[in-house]
Image 1 (cartoon, rainbow, N blue to C red):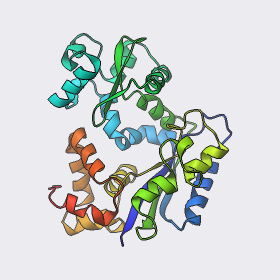
Image 2 (cartoon, rainbow, N blue to C red):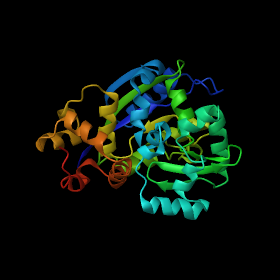
Image 3 (cartoon, one colour):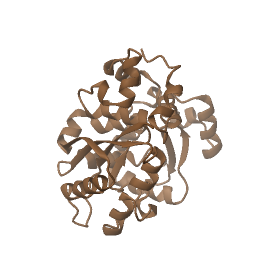
Amino acid sequence: MAINQAVIFTKPVYHLSHGLSPDALYERVDAFLQERRFYVRTHRSVTGADLQAGGIMDQHYVVYSKAVRAGSLDEIQVGEAAKERFKERFGAGWDDEIAQGRLMSTDQLIAERSLTTAVVLDEWEKNLAGGKTFKVQAGLIATFVEAFDAYVINGFYPAMADRFNHPDNLMHYMVVEFDSNDCSWNSFRQDVLGVTNAAKASPTSLRGQLFATYPVELPGSDNFVHGSAGPLEGFAERLVHEEEVGLATSPIGVYLQRRGVSAVTFRAWCARQPIVELASLFDLTEEKNSNEILSTLDPIDFR
């Protein structure tokens, strides 16, 4: 038996046409979790203005935001194997395409071509539907957009960040706990929250029920809630969203405390890690109960 702890927060709904308010969404989420006997340790609401001022969503989604916000792709560590995969998929070299001005960070592309995040998202969604996006490496998904004569990296992210940071957005942030005997982490994601695409989520899951009431046009991105993919990611997310996290209030925090690692030290360690390595560690600990990942963490020097 293990106690699992995850971050859940509501996603923006102000832009939808179904009349669902942030507070009404939270009430649905809270009632759903309470009915299933999840313990809500923390709840607070955060305005879009506060999210923007703190750069919270860029930190939360750092695996994807890094390649979007970079002043230059030289800031991104792209391995030779990843460059080779890029060449095999697109028929052109990574460094050559940078030199030709067709490959750059997404923020650079938006600024140089005077694009809007909505236009970028629209072209991204078209290519995604056509199977034209390609994962070059962890945190770096690319596609070539003919209308721009350029590549777009993580093209879903800029518009998503804009929505989180919008003045009309209100995010409800929660930290929830559940017993692994009652609900494994895999079941938490698949059966309780429902799969990422709300239209394909189980009708008894949270996303499935919400989609049945509010059939959104883009159920993959407008999927109502975020939920931590695993216990390590959940703890790292708390350090992004909360100024102070008592280690004793988290199963992973207790483990780090026993090893003499403070929250400040762990936060600094995360910030130093190359995106590929951090994403790989999150992948290794995804959908595992908190006690099942300790052997993976034991060899790591977090200092």
